Length: 173
Image 1: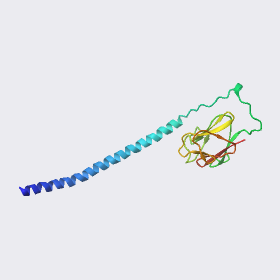
Image 2: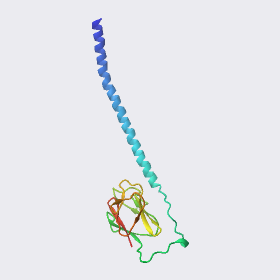
Image 3: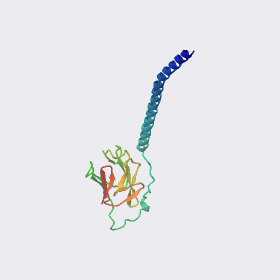
Image 4: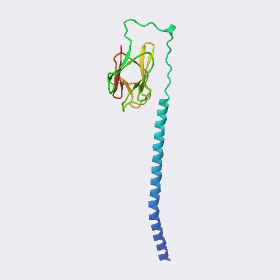
């Protein structure tokens, strides 16, 4: 009877040593499956945010009706062009006609940047009254106005650098 019990205990130990590696393999498989799902969810989140950005964000800008325009102050210089001062597009000039200027890597941007640090829809310059304002459109690396990170629409003065990735732009008269 004692020898029989020893044989059963020995057989149980052998089964247990065979089951532990199988259990470890199953847990490892489940861990890899969970990591795969987390990766897929993260990728879908990025794709969704890019698609939302590509659909265009709508901003309520004050309308300038011909009868209600403010008289322009005399002696004040008005921005007439946007100039790229540093970066791959250095020397590029865009005439400012009052329409918002979209800046980013998207093909339909007004200023298309070939910059690894720029987002698809990175920033927007818009005219409000007589002043131009820059706003960040939720970019990954941020938009900087004279070394200060743009977190809300900020007024841009003439000659003040706006940094988007490796590209620097300025408003000029």
